[in-house]
Length: 529
Ligand code: NOJ
Image (cartoon, rainbow, N blue to C red):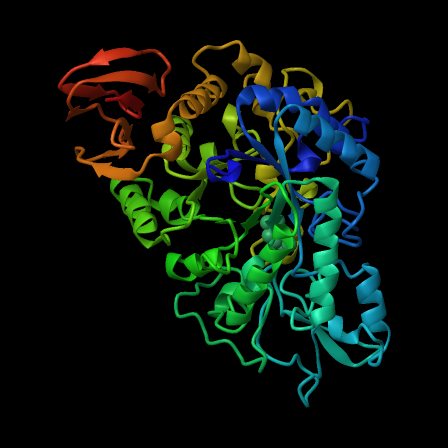
């Protein structure tokens, strides 16, 4: 079976994982120095958020040169060193690709904006103003304000679905496609195991640039982007073809390189991103439904519904995948609480397919408090109701605070004050402390990954819902491993034939059970039947 079909993917936000040169910002050599930790944790594949040359307006998601390393993170040589070491340890390494937009400091955009007849003019999306000088249509950007910015010199607006400093590439232009495919080949030739592709469902926009209709559910205070529904800025049919073209670039290379797509869509719109058997698309179009519908109503009944719906809708050839956190969403332990975070980890690592884990969640890191004057996230600084206006909402910074390694200065992340404050709970909550504790969250994640790896049923078996009392979600994998998750703060009991406990999320009981399983409040159990 191809490695990515069961691989556990671990997301590293390079700025925040480990600093090796004392500038307060994480870097590639820092990551390299922690590879043994990751190997020991039991994950299979690392995904690195962008480390390319960038003015860092959106912390690397504004790329100024696709085939480079920003000096802040190291050099290409450092990257080769990291990749080589990771491979030696049997870890795969996936890098981020940001094809929807570049930085406004990218050479391509500098040329494009230099004049209307520059050969690269059409590499970006330029439109004339309306007769009154206003933007070409009503499209709004994710980080606030219109999706259009006027370039005074050439008298046209350019499109940007995020910051004005992140102009959208024109994916209808074949030269743009080829240029990005060449950048992909650059990293594939180096030996990377694939890409996580940023906002892949946003690559193409409506060719007629029609106004978007109002969103009847938009509420005062919500971000501007959500004022409208997005039939014209998102998920266009052409995008799905491009995804298949990108996949073909990966297929030029040996070694089962993987394509993971960032896609925030309902299941009916998500599934086409797998492509077809003949013309495949993403290997793993990210399934974010646990983070949204799941965490907004964290109950056994809701979760069971989400899993069943996904299982039913997946194309026969498709590999499922599940995600509990990333650098854009508040921390797992903050959203559902520490007790349920253990249940969530058991769920993630026992569902079918490839799970993705966010750095630090294995020690139950919580959202870090960010004082208003320390807010860095451009999304927060620009949007209404944000730190910029009220000094309240720190946007995505809380989930990006430095990894907590030790109870010593700056949590062992750096020798200098880090770019974002370390969460003060690092004194008790850190890798060193949890390493020594046989019942910690860290030990739970390690143990889960061992149990998972040792069970063919968990890795490859089918999924079947199992009858359980209210408040409990249970399922069978491969007909022989039963997972029972107690979402409630009350004890629950369920009937079952005889079984052997492989793991309790409290890490304090093993052994045989017969006829009846008593679940303690917030307990998750894996049983071999
Ligand atoms: C999605 C990324 O996950 C997010 O961090 C970034 O700000 C936007 N894409 C823009 O690239």
